Image (tube, rainbow, N blue to C red; front, top):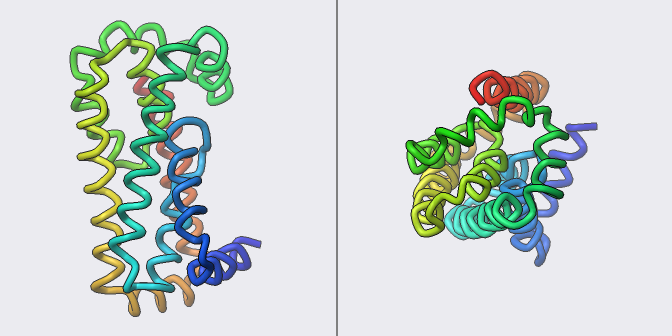
Amino acid sequence: MFRRLYDKTLELAAHPKAGLALFGVSFAESSIFPIPPDVMLIPMVLAERAKAWSYALISTIGSVLGGVAGYAIGYYLFETVGKAVLGFYGYMEKFSNFAATYNEQGIWIVLAAGLTPLPYKIFTIASGVTKMNILAFTAASIAARSIRFFAVSGLLYWFGPPIREFIEKRFGLVLTIFFVFLFGGFILVKYLV
């Protein structure tokens, strides 16, 4: 099933609306969606290495705008939408303790979350709930997300063929490692928050 999804994503890279799909996933991941845009970004860059930098830019812009939407959920809709999203991921219980101290180190937290496999949406919503300075939040998001997506795209651009060959030969291993990092990020946040 996942192999077909990978192959479909490689096909999607050649589609005229590939960038729009990548933007949508990047936007949604920063506010409500649990799957990181790397799932699309990696195969798309591997399929169209010449577009690596534009794909990184699309992911960055989509992710930062999605982060602002997550911030708005926390700021304006925490009582309804924000609590529901945090409850869905099982983070409500520890959230109140976290929110009390969040703004003391908020910029560094947003930077770290934006660079790691931690679920970024939790931090975007938390930034809105705690009313972190929106300009500081946006600057930290731009820095973190651009570093992450341009680094991934750059590595794939320069070392693409061997990486693509490795992924395609050891697809099961790569998928297992991806899910370990994805779920590990959720578990880590659950115990840190």
